[in-house]
Length: 328
Image (cartoon, rainbow, N blue to C red):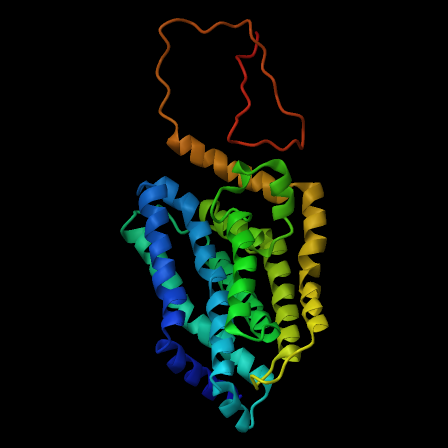
């Protein structure tokens, strides 16, 4: 425990002097926050509540990028070799990296919640317990993903390429950038196999509907199992020396970390629970944007019949279903 605490303090000190870590932990999240709240939500408190969940997920997910790049840079510069001289294990080093990232990131998330409440007049932050659990587990799980990336890549160039390959699907297919219900049906089905989808949906439901931790059992449970798998794998593949290379087949072990979301994606594609919740949230956003209806000058015709979607059918909400008045 003493080694872990000492390493955590050292990692915080090193991170505070690292420009890359500063960019991904402070600058990038705050730029995205004001872009979403001020431009996309147009400072409307109701729309802010819709976008707050995805922007918090942006901040949480971004931690894997800074962690992976920092560890690989430390290895290339020989800093990890100096740590290895001390009586510490790979688990101590990796756990202290996740803990330092958590300590540095959590105040930024709290600042975003404070600004949403005070500057953009957010009506409510939702369920704070659910938010805290999802944010904490999300930081640990995506931070552990960064450890895996750092363990399987040999150079900074490889790290940047792999980070890009992971980052783009996480932000574009999970509902963090575009609302999930706005995407084509086949993309929605693919999104249910991504861990980011469950983080985004869980945070959005916690803000919009004050969802309890018990109602977010799938999100919390899957992210927790994923965090354990990724951390264990990173500890097995971790290297102190820049000269130590891992065989190419070892990178295939990373596929084992996808097992929880492979199974969960199959279940969710059958139940459509996540997609229904995302559609309901998107409907609320459309309602915020729609103008108030005016009183008609003449009675509406009553010879049209309503058409309702089949139960369980998915719809692209960018093209809403049209229906007339129900015949008496």
